[in-house]
Length: 267
Length: 325
Ligand SMILES: Nc1ncnc2c1ncn2[C@@H]1O[C@H](COP(=O)(O)OP(=O)(O)OP(=O)(O)O)[C@@H](O)[C@H]1O
Ligand SMILES: [Mg+2]
View 1 (spheres, helix red, strand yellow):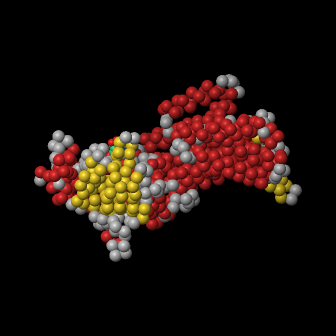
View 2 (cartoon, protein in one colour):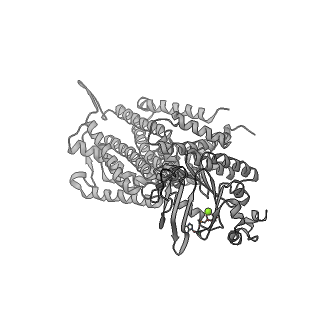
View 3 (cartoon, chains in turn yellow, green):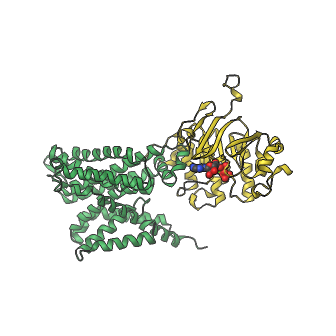
């Protein structure tokens, strides 16, 4: 388990040990132990209320955990505040999309890209930060948001806000990207485009994605973790998960749950 | 069609030219007491700008800015009267005292947001209001402290100071203009964008790596500086300091001026302050219940122009100059 120098290449980008979070009597995350290997696209699935978003909240320091530890690239981050964790290189999107409403799309990206590099200068104009501005241009192009660069974020369509969320997450140059239902609310065309983008991003950034759309999950994920009632039900390759009896019983094989009718177990 | 920015630039130059010529234009055209009214408008709009920086750009509604205004006034008055300081050291004290106070108050206040923040700012200003009332030997209590004006510049035999009306006016104008210019630079800087990000979404701001607490504290101290400087100017302008200016009633007026003029716009506070002080000066000579008109105007604008007079103006111009499709 200890990160020996020989095993450094294979050292998990994110390692979670016995992580637990209770809300009153409800155990939202229940002794979760996980390791995400680098250079793979991980998906977390599970029914509503399984604790997926809460797990992200614990990793990103957004909520304090009751028990357990989190290591990012070997460094313990369990007790750090959100902005410290984000500066170490973990970016996330929120399930409830939230951007800076009154700033323009490019200002949203600019402040996200600059946040880690220092924002204390009160006199220098933002347009004179060449590196950051170039980064913004690149992200705008990458996500095909250039045409919306000067629009106030509060006036965007839901799908475009979701894209901007992803853009902000990558503008920070993260090493690990946590995406919480990134395509939720997108049209089929937008979904298709976004899935392609996420795949491209996964070439260079480690990604963990929470997603309900099984078609998408089984299309893009290298590894899948299934959560139910706060605990981990199963973890493995898409093939293994699709074949797992327990998972099919508890989750995939419930045709009355319309969210999951496109279950791949049938395919 | 002329773009909004072109019209606004023209208007800005026009206003600037007018303000510069006030000491000569007004006595030639109208009652010269208007020179001092305009000087007062400038001082109060600087004060309102401190509310605007916090509320319009960082999302913190402070009802306690009068505390720093009062510290600015007392810094100057105590400096001149009790410590025998000259103009510049007294001005320095009138700025340093509120900035230090803003840092101390801010350490506690910016932990909170929304009504909790508003309440703690009121509490702070009330504490010091009553302290100032009771510490009579230092503050003069109810009566305040009057002082004799020191001169600002002295070259050989010639002296320049607030005793000369034109000098006083221009000194105030340049100070306020310099602060607004600095604020404009600030708003286009990384720090300004970080402030606005926090205003729009503080949760998200901390997720992208901004230290929200620290940034709010910086904003609070800068706002304390603006409020304190306006208080220091007002002390020199009135040649006295008094605890009554630390009452939260004074803070509340600045909030109203800012919101009516347009919070989150650089010149909103100037517009709002001008509107209300002009109404006050014109109406109060004829009718003692002028505050009724002030209240009615405030309510109408808040209902029909939630982004204030400046916001309304921009919407109208944008609609008017938008390409018809
Ligand atoms: N801040 C909170 N306070 C109290 N209970 C919470 C809080 N956040 C989440 N919960 C509860 O914890 C459980 C897990 O919620 P969570 O949002 O993590 O589920 P999820 O797997 O993301 O579900 P979904 O697929 O609907 O997004 C739910 O029962 C939820 O009501
Ligand atoms: Mg969720």
